[in-house]
Amino acid sequence: MTESPQVELVGVGLNATDTLISLSAFPERGSKVEYRSATVLPGGQVATTVVACQHWGVRTRYVGKLGEDHAALLHREEFARAGVEAQIITAPGSASAQSLILVDSVGERTVLCRRDGRIALQPCDLKREWIVNARLLHIDGYDTPAALEAARWARAAGIPVIADLDDLYPGVEELIEKIDYLIVSRDFPRRLMAEPDLSEALRQMQRHYGCRLTAATLGPDGVLAWDGARLCHTSAYRVPVVDTTGAGDVFHAGFIYGLLQGWPLERQLDFACAAAALNCSGLGARGGIEGVERIEALMATGSRYEIPMGLKEVNV
Image 1 (cartoon, rainbow, N blue to C red):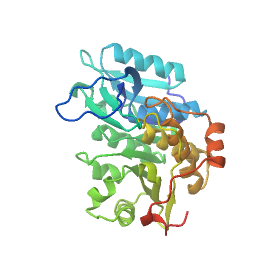
Image 2: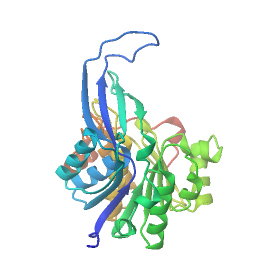
Image 3: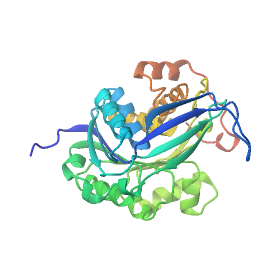
């Protein structure tokens, strides 16, 4: 058997086929509304992060599970087109993950998900060589046992682990102990630590689980991060918003790209904010992935949202 080639980033986690439904306004309960368009596009947390990094010249590998359907073919073709090495496990007779995404007139999205239990990624689906022949591992934790196995292998090989978590999955605390760079949704730290103050919750997460960095993405309020010594807040960029789908996934890609370049934390977070903002100017999870030069141009000249009152005292 040929050993897997060395890559810079391996991603283990979710993919999905997104049906984007554009609406003039979000429907009221019991109402009947017309929609403007429906577009089928590839998405998914880790899959989108990996594709964005590949677009910026990072050598990538994606590990995930698909069903036996047309959606699986769409994903395979997209990974091939992007140049991503895809290690896809097929669940016979099952359907790939699907999302219906309602996008209103200001670009805010509401997601309805359907996922066949047979496409849950299992530890036995993974090969150690896929994980350890990489510089970084990125996971989402949805299929927690498989994510934990990958994180254990990475840790044992000295490979940093980055995670995008948005829910308290069963077993997630054991997984967090294996994560170096934990970048989560806004409410995750408060829920995990039972601490209403976000900055204090980030500090507690970092101390309790031993992460190098804990951070929370805040949408138009940017991102707040704690590195064990100081808080760092980076403001979000203002762009014409078409669709916020995939903003967090591309943020993680931007952070990973900066980490691979060896940039200081402030520049990593700034690049990630700019990349995420630009992605919101296109339709779909990957519709606004721009090149590095365009992202850096926004960093140099773009306008930002105001710093929220509760974060004005944080040094950036």
